[in-house]
Length: 476
Image 1 (cartoon, one colour):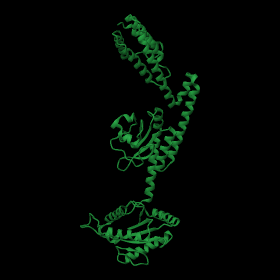
Image 2: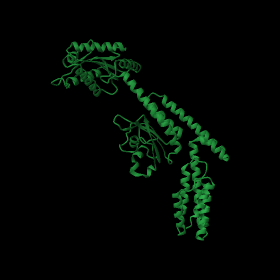
Image 3: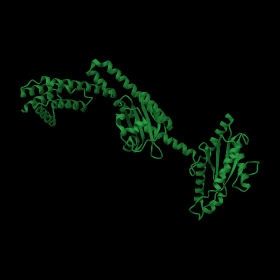
Image 4: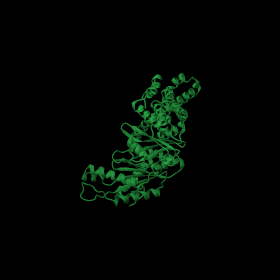
């Protein structure tokens, strides 16, 4: 086939000041022309549709529609091939023209979506398409409103110094702002599992842990954004996502990265189709701010915890003990509820330190603290009062019950000697405990502490390893 017909086609692009066909494209068009002359029209149609699609996607924000050159070029191609073949190809190319027009409409729709996301292109669009001025002005205002709202959300999220408010504010704010069917934050817990911290529209509740190897853990491991479409039709491949969001059609997963560490993921999704690109762009901008807010909240929480925690035992410290004691007395007084205090002292601790050394003494203190944590209720407040002395606040506990708890603790320590590297045998540890109950033994913090201390001293004087109550005989 003569090559000059290709030059005629390429001249159209040059005249329109658009990039001409590349060598691979010319080769593909030559092959399609040969196929047409052999009776195969489909290759010509595929070539021009693919060319239009490629040119349209290459720069979707470019205001020059590839149709400016491709439309006339198709006509030249038709005429040149008709001349070579000696046949009228008008009917054969009519279907191609229709398909290209449909592609053109699709491309224009994609341009509109990009303009929604990037409102700074509106002014240029206004100049080129003045007939749609009012429509694009509305889009412009909407985009500005969304950007402002996202800015406000970012400021609010970063202003919080507690983890839970950060999670809740982010999820609720994004779901409302972007009209999302699903929104959730997962972070890695102490077991390196992804745990749901807050969610909107999900099938699971906070505390849910994702199965290993699923979409969400992989997003954390790879630290990359992931969009998952057609979730319902992908079978076992998306089973973990359907467990989280049963009716989701599409989910977008954003890694939450601070520095070189990926702490979790932010997940958004819709029921009615793929998550719009404009939405993912907005959230992608916000994700680093969310990660920073979470990190700040964790740091704040850690500092607060350090301020109220004894460094050796991990229990609450003396200062926190007094703060909580006054608070619990106020609650007990207001609602007329029982409240008891135990003061615990390790028997012969100085002698133990002198015999085995201070490092062994520290080991004993940590062992006692661990046993108290394991044995007592989660609502009980366990503190290191000072030295070898511990204090326990028993909420909703009357005197008889408090005495039983104290006796159980005495028996626990007496029957469970500690193994020390510096000792040749198991070392017995015993404790003495004083008990005081509000309001019978005192209605102020000072009175309760004094009464419990007096009970502790009574237990010591009676021979140790027992429970003491002021003004009463010690309980072995």
